Length: 386
Ligand SMILES: NC(=O)c1ccc[n+]([C@@H]2O[C@H](COP(=O)([O-])OP(=O)(O)OC[C@H]3O[C@@H](n4cnc5c(N)ncnc54)[C@H](O)[C@@H]3O)[C@@H](O)[C@H]2O)c1
Image (cartoon, rainbow, N blue to C red):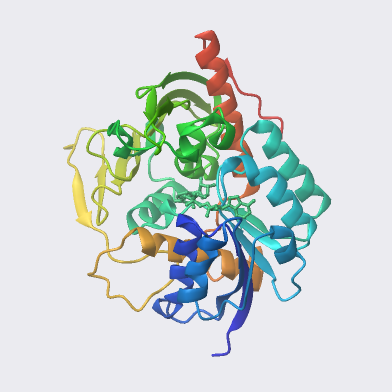
Protein backbone atom coordinates (compact mmCIF):
# COMPACT_ATOMS: atom_id res chain seq x y z
CA UNK A 1 0.00 0.00 0.00
CA UNK A 2 1.39 3.46 -0.91
CA UNK A 3 1.64 5.72 2.11
CA UNK A 4 1.07 9.43 2.29
CA UNK A 5 4.12 10.86 4.06
CA UNK A 6 3.47 13.92 6.22
CA UNK A 7 6.59 16.04 6.79
CA UNK A 8 6.75 17.31 10.35
CA UNK A 9 8.74 19.92 12.15
CA UNK A 10 9.05 19.66 15.93
CA UNK A 11 9.32 22.81 18.05
CA UNK A 12 10.43 21.94 21.58
CA UNK A 13 12.84 19.01 21.76
CA UNK A 14 12.22 18.14 25.41
CA UNK A 15 10.27 15.30 27.01
CA UNK A 16 7.25 15.40 24.70
CA UNK A 17 9.17 16.24 21.52
CA UNK A 18 11.10 13.01 22.07
CA UNK A 19 7.89 11.06 22.72
CA UNK A 20 6.67 12.06 19.25
CA UNK A 21 10.00 11.02 17.71
CA UNK A 22 9.65 7.65 19.42
CA UNK A 23 6.07 7.21 18.16
CA UNK A 24 7.12 8.13 14.61
CA UNK A 25 9.99 5.63 14.79
CA UNK A 26 7.54 2.89 15.82
CA UNK A 27 5.03 3.56 13.03
CA UNK A 28 5.37 -0.03 11.77
CA UNK A 29 3.48 -1.02 14.92
CA UNK A 30 0.31 0.27 13.23
CA UNK A 31 -1.30 -2.25 10.93
CA UNK A 32 -2.41 -1.11 7.55
CA UNK A 33 -2.47 2.70 7.82
CA UNK A 34 -1.87 4.61 4.58
CA UNK A 35 -0.15 7.63 6.13
CA UNK A 36 2.99 8.19 8.15
CA UNK A 37 4.80 11.11 9.79
CA UNK A 38 8.39 11.95 8.91
CA UNK A 39 10.20 14.39 11.19
CA UNK A 40 12.40 16.39 8.80
CA UNK A 41 13.26 19.43 10.93
CA UNK A 42 13.41 20.33 14.61
CA UNK A 43 13.82 23.50 16.61
CA UNK A 44 14.78 24.18 20.19
CA UNK A 45 15.96 27.42 21.75
CA UNK A 46 18.57 25.28 23.46
CA UNK A 47 20.68 23.74 20.65
CA UNK A 48 21.82 20.94 22.98
CA UNK A 49 18.21 19.66 23.11
CA UNK A 50 18.10 19.38 19.30
CA UNK A 51 21.32 17.31 19.38
CA UNK A 52 19.38 14.26 20.58
CA UNK A 53 17.25 14.42 17.42
CA UNK A 54 20.32 14.75 15.21
CA UNK A 55 21.77 11.63 16.80
CA UNK A 56 18.63 9.52 17.11
CA UNK A 57 16.27 10.46 14.30
CA UNK A 58 17.75 9.73 10.86
CA UNK A 59 14.96 11.57 8.99
CA UNK A 60 15.91 14.93 10.58
CA UNK A 61 17.64 17.01 7.92
CA UNK A 62 17.67 20.42 9.53
CA UNK A 63 17.84 21.83 13.07
CA UNK A 64 17.02 25.40 14.07
CA UNK A 65 17.24 27.45 17.23
CA UNK A 66 14.75 30.09 16.02
CA UNK A 67 11.27 28.65 15.37
CA UNK A 68 10.58 31.32 12.72
CA UNK A 69 13.23 29.72 10.52
CA UNK A 70 11.46 26.38 10.84
CA UNK A 71 8.16 28.06 9.92
CA UNK A 72 9.82 29.42 6.77
CA UNK A 73 10.96 25.90 5.80
CA UNK A 74 8.76 24.93 2.84
CA UNK A 75 9.48 21.23 3.23
CA UNK A 76 7.59 21.22 6.56
CA UNK A 77 3.84 20.60 6.26
CA UNK A 78 2.83 20.21 9.90
CA UNK A 79 4.22 21.08 13.31
CA UNK A 80 4.25 19.46 16.72
CA UNK A 81 4.82 22.18 19.31
CA UNK A 82 5.74 21.16 22.88
CA UNK A 83 7.10 24.20 24.71
CA UNK A 84 6.40 25.83 28.11
CA UNK A 85 2.90 27.30 28.50
CA UNK A 86 3.96 30.98 28.41
CA UNK A 87 5.06 30.45 24.79
CA UNK A 88 1.92 28.73 23.50
CA UNK A 89 0.04 31.84 22.35
CA UNK A 90 2.85 33.41 20.36
CA UNK A 91 4.16 30.20 18.83
CA UNK A 92 0.77 28.65 18.04
CA UNK A 93 -0.46 31.90 16.44
CA UNK A 94 2.70 32.16 14.32
CA UNK A 95 2.43 28.49 13.31
CA UNK A 96 -1.24 28.86 12.33
CA UNK A 97 -0.48 32.04 10.37
CA UNK A 98 2.34 30.23 8.53
CA UNK A 99 -0.31 27.89 7.11
CA UNK A 100 1.17 24.74 8.66
CA UNK A 101 -1.03 22.24 10.47
CA UNK A 102 -0.48 21.99 14.22
CA UNK A 103 -0.70 19.45 16.98
CA UNK A 104 -0.11 21.71 19.97
CA UNK A 105 0.43 20.67 23.52
CA UNK A 106 -2.07 21.50 26.23
CA UNK A 107 -3.21 23.71 27.83
CA UNK A 108 -3.29 25.72 24.55
CA UNK A 109 -2.28 29.04 26.10
CA UNK A 110 -1.12 29.98 29.57
CA UNK A 111 -4.49 31.57 30.43
CA UNK A 112 -7.88 32.41 28.92
CA UNK A 113 -6.55 35.53 27.17
CA UNK A 114 -3.72 33.57 25.51
CA UNK A 115 -6.18 30.86 24.49
CA UNK A 116 -8.44 33.52 22.91
CA UNK A 117 -5.48 34.77 20.82
CA UNK A 118 -4.97 31.25 19.47
CA UNK A 119 -8.68 30.96 18.66
CA UNK A 120 -8.64 34.31 16.81
CA UNK A 121 -5.76 33.07 14.64
CA UNK A 122 -7.70 29.88 13.93
CA UNK A 123 -10.77 31.80 12.91
CA UNK A 124 -8.69 33.85 10.47
CA UNK A 125 -7.01 30.72 9.05
CA UNK A 126 -9.73 28.03 8.81
CA UNK A 127 -7.70 25.96 6.32
CA UNK A 128 -5.20 24.68 8.88
CA UNK A 129 -5.94 21.62 10.99
CA UNK A 130 -5.20 22.32 14.63
CA UNK A 131 -5.59 19.79 17.43
CA UNK A 132 -4.58 19.57 21.07
CA UNK A 133 -2.52 16.71 22.45
CA UNK A 134 -4.44 14.38 24.80
CA UNK A 135 -3.61 10.69 24.64
CA UNK A 136 -5.37 8.92 27.53
CA UNK A 137 -8.72 8.39 25.77
CA UNK A 138 -6.84 6.04 23.41
CA UNK A 139 -6.31 3.44 26.16
CA UNK A 140 -8.50 0.42 25.35
CA UNK A 141 -10.40 0.75 28.67
CA UNK A 142 -11.11 4.44 28.02
CA UNK A 143 -12.12 3.63 24.47
CA UNK A 144 -14.58 1.06 25.78
CA UNK A 145 -16.13 3.69 28.07
CA UNK A 146 -16.40 6.14 25.14
CA UNK A 147 -18.29 3.47 23.21
CA UNK A 148 -20.67 2.87 26.14
CA UNK A 149 -21.36 6.61 26.48
CA UNK A 150 -22.01 6.90 22.73
CA UNK A 151 -24.41 3.96 22.93
CA UNK A 152 -26.28 5.60 25.84
CA UNK A 153 -25.67 2.57 28.09
CA UNK A 154 -25.57 4.46 31.39
CA UNK A 155 -29.22 5.53 31.55
CA UNK A 156 -29.65 8.56 33.74
CA UNK A 157 -26.23 9.68 34.89
CA UNK A 158 -25.95 9.84 38.66
CA UNK A 159 -22.42 11.18 38.99
CA UNK A 160 -19.10 11.44 37.13
CA UNK A 161 -15.62 11.56 38.54
CA UNK A 162 -12.50 12.13 36.47
CA UNK A 163 -8.95 12.90 37.45
CA UNK A 164 -5.26 12.88 36.74
CA UNK A 165 -2.95 12.31 39.67
CA UNK A 166 0.84 12.47 39.99
CA UNK A 167 3.01 12.06 43.07
CA UNK A 168 6.62 12.95 42.27
CA UNK A 169 6.12 16.43 43.79
CA UNK A 170 5.54 14.81 47.18
CA UNK A 171 9.34 14.85 47.40
CA UNK A 172 10.20 18.35 48.74
CA UNK A 173 13.81 17.91 47.58
CA UNK A 174 12.75 17.76 43.92
CA UNK A 175 14.21 20.92 42.31
CA UNK A 176 11.99 23.65 40.89
CA UNK A 177 11.34 23.68 37.12
CA UNK A 178 9.21 25.75 34.73
CA UNK A 179 6.09 23.73 35.59
CA UNK A 180 6.14 25.08 39.17
CA UNK A 181 6.45 28.79 38.30
CA UNK A 182 3.54 31.08 37.48
CA UNK A 183 5.48 32.97 34.77
CA UNK A 184 6.00 29.83 32.69
CA UNK A 185 3.23 27.44 33.77
CA UNK A 186 0.51 29.99 34.58
CA UNK A 187 -1.92 30.82 37.39
CA UNK A 188 -3.82 27.62 36.66
CA UNK A 189 -0.95 25.58 38.13
CA UNK A 190 -1.78 21.86 38.16
CA UNK A 191 -5.05 22.53 36.30
CA UNK A 192 -3.21 23.93 33.28
CA UNK A 193 -0.69 21.14 33.41
CA UNK A 194 -3.04 18.19 33.89
CA UNK A 195 -6.58 19.48 33.43
CA UNK A 196 -7.03 19.16 29.66
CA UNK A 197 -6.44 15.43 30.04
CA UNK A 198 -9.26 15.30 32.58
CA UNK A 199 -11.69 17.47 30.63
CA UNK A 200 -11.13 15.96 27.18
CA UNK A 201 -13.80 13.26 27.49
CA UNK A 202 -16.37 15.32 29.43
CA UNK A 203 -16.06 18.01 26.73
CA UNK A 204 -16.34 15.40 23.94
CA UNK A 205 -19.48 14.00 25.59
CA UNK A 206 -21.00 17.50 25.88
CA UNK A 207 -20.79 17.47 29.70
CA UNK A 208 -20.11 21.16 30.20
CA UNK A 209 -20.19 22.38 33.80
CA UNK A 210 -22.45 25.36 34.34
CA UNK A 211 -20.78 26.06 37.68
CA UNK A 212 -17.72 25.08 39.65
CA UNK A 213 -16.65 25.22 43.29
CA UNK A 214 -12.90 24.81 43.49
CA UNK A 215 -10.63 23.74 46.31
CA UNK A 216 -7.03 24.48 45.32
CA UNK A 217 -4.03 23.56 47.47
CA UNK A 218 -0.41 24.64 47.67
CA UNK A 219 1.37 21.96 49.64
CA UNK A 220 5.10 22.46 49.06
CA UNK A 221 5.87 26.17 49.36
CA UNK A 222 9.53 26.20 48.31
CA UNK A 223 11.92 23.98 46.41
CA UNK A 224 15.66 23.74 45.75
CA UNK A 225 16.73 26.00 42.89
CA UNK A 226 19.41 23.54 41.78
CA UNK A 227 22.15 26.01 42.75
CA UNK A 228 22.21 25.38 46.49
CA UNK A 229 19.38 27.78 47.42
CA UNK A 230 15.62 27.56 47.86
CA UNK A 231 12.98 29.40 45.76
CA UNK A 232 9.22 29.77 46.15
CA UNK A 233 7.14 27.04 44.51
CA UNK A 234 4.36 29.27 43.29
CA UNK A 235 1.75 27.18 41.53
CA UNK A 236 -1.24 25.20 42.79
CA UNK A 237 -0.23 21.62 43.55
CA UNK A 238 -3.69 20.06 43.73
CA UNK A 239 -7.17 21.00 42.56
CA UNK A 240 -10.56 19.50 43.29
CA UNK A 241 -13.40 20.94 41.20
CA UNK A 242 -16.99 20.18 42.11
CA UNK A 243 -18.97 20.88 38.95
CA UNK A 244 -22.68 20.99 38.18
CA UNK A 245 -23.24 19.64 34.66
CA UNK A 246 -26.38 20.44 32.74
CA UNK A 247 -26.98 18.88 29.32
CA UNK A 248 -30.10 19.04 27.15
CA UNK A 249 -31.72 16.22 29.14
CA UNK A 250 -29.63 15.60 32.25
CA UNK A 251 -28.14 17.35 35.27
CA UNK A 252 -25.53 15.69 37.46
CA UNK A 253 -22.50 16.37 39.65
CA UNK A 254 -19.03 15.91 38.17
CA UNK A 255 -15.94 15.96 40.37
CA UNK A 256 -12.71 16.69 38.51
CA UNK A 257 -9.33 16.51 40.20
CA UNK A 258 -5.81 17.29 39.07
CA UNK A 259 -3.11 16.51 41.60
CA UNK A 260 0.64 16.76 41.52
CA UNK A 261 0.82 15.49 45.08
CA UNK A 262 -1.26 12.32 45.27
CA UNK A 263 0.78 9.81 47.28
CA UNK A 264 1.22 6.51 45.48
CA UNK A 265 0.12 7.71 42.05
CA UNK A 266 2.74 7.95 39.30
CA UNK A 267 0.58 8.93 36.34
CA UNK A 268 -2.97 7.91 37.17
CA UNK A 269 -5.68 9.08 34.76
CA UNK A 270 -9.17 7.83 35.46
CA UNK A 271 -12.84 8.24 34.70
CA UNK A 272 -15.77 6.82 36.66
CA UNK A 273 -19.37 7.12 35.55
CA UNK A 274 -22.30 6.05 37.67
CA UNK A 275 -25.65 5.66 35.95
CA UNK A 276 -29.04 4.19 36.70
CA UNK A 277 -28.63 1.49 34.01
CA UNK A 278 -24.87 0.97 34.20
CA UNK A 279 -21.78 2.20 35.99
CA UNK A 280 -18.23 1.89 34.68
CA UNK A 281 -14.69 2.88 35.47
CA UNK A 282 -11.25 2.88 33.94
CA UNK A 283 -7.95 3.93 35.47
CA UNK A 284 -4.44 3.81 34.04
CA UNK A 285 -3.47 2.44 37.48
CA UNK A 286 -4.70 -0.91 36.18
CA UNK A 287 -4.24 -0.22 32.49
CA UNK A 288 -5.51 -3.58 31.27
CA UNK A 289 -8.73 -3.54 33.18
CA UNK A 290 -12.10 -1.96 32.66
CA UNK A 291 -14.95 -2.42 35.10
CA UNK A 292 -18.67 -2.20 34.60
CA UNK A 293 -21.79 -2.79 36.63
CA UNK A 294 -24.91 -3.25 34.52
CA UNK A 295 -28.10 -2.86 36.53
CA UNK A 296 -31.59 -4.22 36.06
CA UNK A 297 -34.14 -2.98 38.65
CA UNK A 298 -34.39 -5.36 41.58
CA UNK A 299 -31.47 -7.49 40.39
CA UNK A 300 -28.03 -7.99 41.87
CA UNK A 301 -25.46 -5.18 41.69
CA UNK A 302 -22.21 -6.85 40.66
CA UNK A 303 -19.02 -5.31 39.26
CA UNK A 304 -17.49 -7.10 36.28
CA UNK A 305 -13.79 -6.48 35.73
CA UNK A 306 -12.25 -7.72 32.52
CA UNK A 307 -8.82 -7.49 30.96
CA UNK A 308 -9.65 -5.31 27.98
CA UNK A 309 -8.02 -6.62 24.79
CA UNK A 310 -5.23 -4.56 23.18
CA UNK A 311 -7.64 -2.67 20.97
CA UNK A 312 -7.64 1.09 20.49
CA UNK A 313 -8.64 3.36 17.63
CA UNK A 314 -6.15 1.91 15.09
CA UNK A 315 -5.29 -1.75 14.53
CA UNK A 316 -1.76 -2.81 15.41
CA UNK A 317 0.52 -5.78 15.00
CA UNK A 318 0.22 -6.49 18.74
CA UNK A 319 -1.85 -9.49 19.82
CA UNK A 320 -5.04 -8.81 21.74
CA UNK A 321 -3.72 -10.52 24.88
CA UNK A 322 -0.78 -8.12 25.34
CA UNK A 323 -0.73 -5.02 27.52
CA UNK A 324 -1.27 -1.45 26.34
CA UNK A 325 0.78 1.41 27.83
CA UNK A 326 1.44 5.16 27.79
CA UNK A 327 3.63 5.11 24.66
CA UNK A 328 0.94 3.09 22.86
CA UNK A 329 -1.60 5.81 23.66
CA UNK A 330 0.79 8.45 22.27
CA UNK A 331 1.20 6.42 19.07
CA UNK A 332 -2.58 6.06 18.69
CA UNK A 333 -3.10 9.80 19.23
CA UNK A 334 -0.52 10.51 16.53
CA UNK A 335 -2.27 8.08 14.20
CA UNK A 336 -5.53 10.00 14.73
CA UNK A 337 -3.85 13.33 13.97
CA UNK A 338 -2.08 12.04 10.85
CA UNK A 339 -5.28 10.29 9.70
CA UNK A 340 -7.12 13.60 9.89
CA UNK A 341 -4.34 15.39 7.97
CA UNK A 342 -4.30 12.68 5.30
CA UNK A 343 -8.05 12.13 4.89
CA UNK A 344 -9.85 15.11 6.46
CA UNK A 345 -12.20 14.93 9.45
CA UNK A 346 -14.93 13.16 7.49
CA UNK A 347 -12.68 10.61 5.81
CA UNK A 348 -10.84 9.28 8.85
CA UNK A 349 -10.33 5.54 9.19
CA UNK A 350 -12.10 5.65 12.58
CA UNK A 351 -14.21 8.37 14.20
CA UNK A 352 -12.28 9.38 17.35
CA UNK A 353 -10.49 12.66 16.62
CA UNK A 354 -7.77 14.28 18.73
CA UNK A 355 -8.92 16.94 21.19
CA UNK A 356 -10.13 20.04 19.39
CA UNK A 357 -9.34 23.73 20.04
CA UNK A 358 -13.01 24.12 21.12
CA UNK A 359 -12.50 21.43 23.77
CA UNK A 360 -9.28 23.14 24.90
CA UNK A 361 -11.17 26.45 25.15
CA UNK A 362 -13.84 24.72 27.23
CA UNK A 363 -11.14 23.59 29.65
CA UNK A 364 -9.92 27.22 29.95
CA UNK A 365 -13.42 28.35 30.91
CA UNK A 366 -13.53 25.76 33.65
CA UNK A 367 -10.02 26.62 34.99
CA UNK A 368 -10.71 30.37 34.88
CA UNK A 369 -13.95 29.89 36.80
CA UNK A 370 -12.09 27.62 39.26
CA UNK A 371 -9.58 30.41 39.99
CA UNK A 372 -12.50 32.80 40.58
CA UNK A 373 -14.12 30.27 42.92
CA UNK A 374 -10.87 29.92 44.86
CA UNK A 375 -10.58 33.72 45.19
CA UNK A 376 -14.17 34.30 46.33
CA UNK A 377 -14.75 31.06 48.22
CA UNK A 378 -18.04 30.79 46.33
CA UNK A 379 -19.37 28.73 43.44
CA UNK A 380 -18.51 30.35 40.09
CA UNK A 381 -20.91 30.23 37.14
CA UNK A 382 -19.62 29.30 33.67
CA UNK A 383 -21.16 30.87 30.57
CA UNK A 384 -21.22 28.67 27.44
CA UNK A 385 -22.02 31.22 24.77
CA UNK A 386 -21.32 29.02 21.74
N1 LIG B 1 0.56 15.12 26.57
C1 LIG B 1 1.24 14.83 27.67
O1 LIG B 1 1.08 13.77 28.26
C2 LIG B 1 2.25 15.82 28.18
C3 LIG B 1 3.20 15.42 29.14
C4 LIG B 1 4.14 16.38 29.58
C5 LIG B 1 4.11 17.67 29.08
N2 LIG B 1 3.16 18.02 28.16
C6 LIG B 1 3.11 19.40 27.60
O2 LIG B 1 4.15 19.51 26.62
C7 LIG B 1 4.67 20.84 26.61
C8 LIG B 1 6.17 20.76 26.85
O3 LIG B 1 6.40 20.01 28.02
P1 LIG B 1 7.71 19.10 28.17
O4 LIG B 1 7.44 18.25 29.38
O5 LIG B 1 8.06 18.46 26.89
O6 LIG B 1 8.75 20.24 28.54
P2 LIG B 1 10.34 20.20 28.47
O7 LIG B 1 10.81 21.25 29.41
O8 LIG B 1 10.85 18.81 28.62
O9 LIG B 1 10.64 20.65 26.95
C9 LIG B 1 10.33 21.94 26.47
C10 LIG B 1 11.38 22.31 25.44
O10 LIG B 1 11.01 23.56 24.85
C11 LIG B 1 12.21 24.26 24.58
N3 LIG B 1 11.96 25.68 24.35
C12 LIG B 1 11.77 26.64 25.26
N4 LIG B 1 11.58 27.83 24.64
C13 LIG B 1 11.64 27.58 23.30
C14 LIG B 1 11.51 28.40 22.13
N5 LIG B 1 11.27 29.72 22.21
N6 LIG B 1 11.65 27.81 20.92
C15 LIG B 1 11.90 26.49 20.81
N7 LIG B 1 12.04 25.67 21.89
C16 LIG B 1 11.89 26.21 23.11
C17 LIG B 1 13.07 23.99 25.81
O11 LIG B 1 14.44 24.28 25.58
C18 LIG B 1 12.79 22.49 26.05
O12 LIG B 1 13.73 21.67 25.37
C19 LIG B 1 3.88 21.61 27.66
O13 LIG B 1 2.81 22.28 27.03
C20 LIG B 1 3.34 20.53 28.58
O14 LIG B 1 2.13 20.88 29.24
C21 LIG B 1 2.26 17.11 27.70
